[in-house]
Amino acid sequence: MDHEKQRARYLAGTEGAPPVPPPGGYRGARREAFVPSPPAAVSVSVEEEPKKPANALGWTALTVAVLFALTLLGTLLAGSTDILYSVTMVTAQLVVVATVIAALLSPRGRLLGAIALVVTILFNVATVGGMSALQTSASGNYEGMKSAEQKHAEAYPGIKGTDPQQTLAQQSLEDVRAQSESLFADIRARLTDEFGYTWVAVGDEDLRPERNGYGGESMLVEYTSQGWATEQPIQDDDRKHAVMAVINEVVIEHGLWELYSFNDPAISGIDPGMITKLYGSDDPRSQHTWEYYTENYPDPLRFYADIHDLSNDQDGGFLAAREAQQARTGEPLEGLQLFVLASGVLSDADREEFETRLQDYPGYE
Image (cartoon, rainbow, N blue to C red; front, side, top):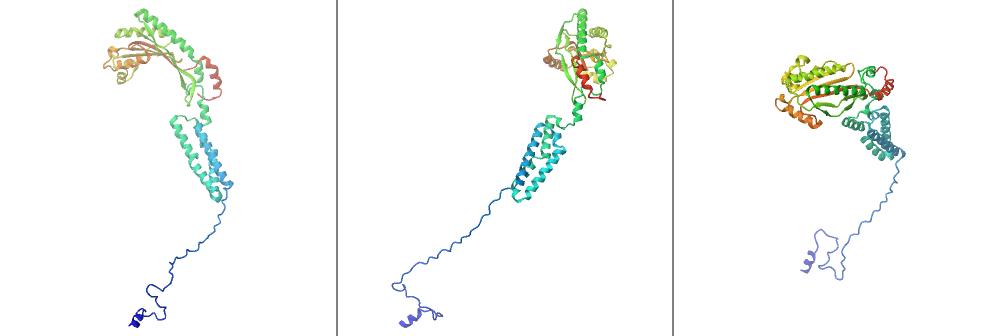
């Protein structure tokens, strides 16, 4: 029996194998836990290649790109749009691009070349030129886009289409001013004597530079005199005709042509619809404004005599317009007004300079 038990402790097919230890193990045997040893550390030595400094080509590309960008910005701030699109600037741009490309192809210059490329993309002739064009359009300053010939023409002292010799031969600014003051004084005296009108000065003399037709200002000015107005209204149709008859006599005495009526369609020939729009009616008897005119051609003096009559205001619109005008100038709402306008007149003080500057413009007129 014991023998059978002993045999049962062996497994079939295990002939030649060491015997299985008894339950609980052999007496006195010491059991130690198996701890696997860690794998041996693998030491890999990687030799780092020392970084090579960027070569001169990279620095050159970056320096050239930055300097070119600063040049473009300086030109933009100066408003010289014409320089931006000049052959010199475009050629310089191509040189910068070529230098940047060469730096990008160089391993040691690639980093600085990439930075230079960014600078070149942000600041080049096309982008800065576009910014300059927008700035010019917004400000209206096209000075930098003009050729030398255009700038020369802009300084022409006369007016295009006007013979400068005619300008020199006609009345000067001082002549027009003196004749205007004399004319006003005589008209005021005559109307005061005949109708008892009193007068008030309206506005101030105004001198406005005349454009020369070539994009600049001439040395000539447009003269607008100080006006004069009656402090009394003139509403009766017969009285209006009588007042204009007296004025007509005085202007002829001063060498001007006879008065001409803009507001009378039978005289002016202006379309009745336009007459109504300008003067409130195509019938002078119901118009809120009479406008008479004369001049001393070929001299530049132009004389105006207007009568404003609120009694012919049909809808209150003319009264509103006159009130707005009174608020600006302080003139009476209605009555007679006199003023003189002269275009393209030269001051005596500028005559010598005008003649000197004309010598640089042969063939101009």
